[in-house]
Every structure is written in structure tokens, then in C-alpha cells.
Image (cartoon, rainbow, N blue to C red):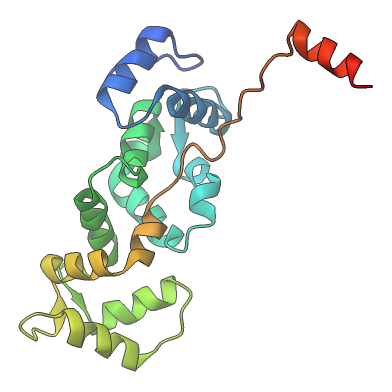
Length: 199
């Protein structure tokens, strides 16, 4: 990916990222500032432990699974530069195709790494989500979505489940514009005159 400066993004870099990612200019600036804040050593990279400090992930019920995925798959040599930071965060952007989120979520739910979500795995997922172990709920999910009654959900079954359960999409979408400070309009001479005449 593009070679980025570690302390500041110039206009060319921002334009490159706008053209080649799902993020707009304001989101890129905000995420870069967040990245620089997390990069306490000013090394141009963040570690697994730095990534855990992102508020959107800290409050996500899937935090443990997402962090496990990052640790196992993303952080080559336990470090991530800004370009890879954006590449990972794009999964959670509303402009990213839903299939990307479905595949990502299926992969992090696939605890046995056998491309299937069996009864035991579904029980563990309930625990990760902060839900009680509930045999009936898991059996209901398998009965409703396990086409062919294989005893597990494959990616096609899971896609159906994801598309019918809006809660999963809500967990997977992060509103990156929510924390961007709103620009305040500068006062004009007319604002000053108007306020003085109304007093």
C-alpha cells in the first residue's frame, strides 16, 4: 500500500486514500489522528495492545473475537501501520459490501477453523456475546438455518442468518463520522450586529 508519513498526512496522501479506500476525507483525518494518538512511541505503527484501546472495539460485544483475529491474522510482527489500520477498519464501514462483513464474521466465529459453525461453537459464541448458555436457542438456530440438517452452519447458512438478523449488521457497522468534531461556523459582522441589537 502507499507509503505514508508517520506524523502527518499531506494532501496527496489524503487524496490517494480517498480514492483507494471507502473512507472520506474527514474520516481519514480523524482516523489518522486516532492512529497517531495510539502510536505513543511515534514509530508509525501500533501494536495489538494499542489497537485494544479503540473505543468502538472496546464496547463491541465481539471484542474478544475481533482482537483474537487481529492477533492471529493481521499484526505481522505484532505491528500495524496506518495503511493496514485503514485496511482492517474498512471491514466495519457502511460502504463496504455486506459480504465482506459476513465472511469476516463467519471466520471469527469459526473457532475450530473447519469452515462450519457446529452446536458447540454456537454455544461458545453466545457466551462471547454475553448471553447465557441456552440449548434451545442454539437448536432453534440450527433448525431454522441449517439447510440439509448437516448439524452445523456453513457459510451459505450463516449468510442467510446474517441477512435475516439485523442485530449482527448493527454490531459490525461502525459509524466513523460519529466522533468527528463538527466545524463551528465563524461569527460574521452580521451575527455581532444582530446580537447587539437584540440585547
